Length: 425
Image 1 (spheres, rainbow, N blue to C red):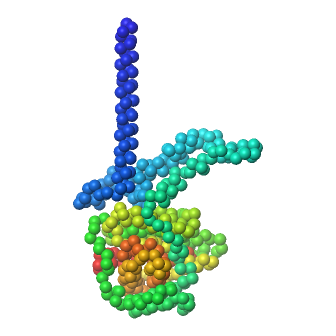
Image 2: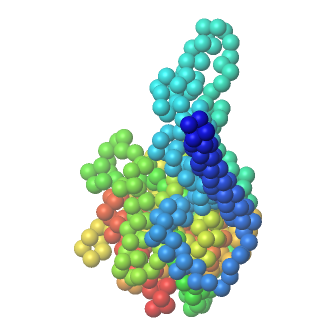
Image 3: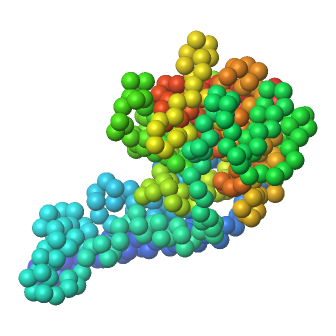
């Protein structure tokens, strides 16, 4: 009887040992796979070539929506494992790499203690410095930001805001700033701010675009450097004080306009678009162009088929609200202004004329179809990340005094002419 009991205990112990061993081996295999995958990702080596990448990616996006979310969020510089950790942090309020945060998420007492509230009180009573704060550990978002900066080779140049705050439509007010030269040809006008260059509009219009749309996949990237630039809800707010010009509510800012443009291109014209809504101008506009450069660079690296990159903004006056609109097909429609950056500040941008060519062709088509919808093309000494492709532009749609509906109308017309340019009509 004793022998039977001993054999039974040994059998149970053996099963438990096997289960533990299988679990350890599984965890080890997952860990090794994750490390190897991250190392291959960072090495940027092409393991398999000459395959239909877009078909494969589309299949993965359907089966694993998280992949599509990552690639369309601007966070593709973060590994899959890092993204999963961030999702866990957002959902459950703890960081997998910080056990203390798990306790804090489960118990208000622990949370209060480790965020420093209780320790600050102790330090005041004991006249000493608190020795531990959860803030010292850094949130996962802060850590991810640090890893982005350290891993990314993309520099972060400082740019001024792109909204041309002193440039109200010159054709409407008949005023031109002293440092602005207006160049016109037929129905196209260019406001050249501190640009001492010879620009032959007719020659550029007659030249074909140096953009090749042959690759399969998305053709257009839409993103927002100043993501929180907002609009008014209706015209009754135009003269009211205290109406903010910035908002994180995507129903009333440039993200909504970008989404309208993207959806029209997709559904009406069958053009695949990546629309990225990453907020780049928080906590402030300082460094926003560096952050949006990192986002756009990562997306272009993953989608080499993208040739047109549009940074959607809206204009503003600063002190009072700016409304630029005209009647198109019986509806109030916000005016559109293309901003073309150059290499005037010394940053490398040798192909800026290709971007200007695209702006002029879009301007010409808009003017022919919908007279009054555009403002003069604006040229700046600043590069504004437009060195990324030969089809990169800032598009200012309306101002902070335009209603969101006026800007949505403009997006539809912009989509129409973009389709004609992409399909060479």
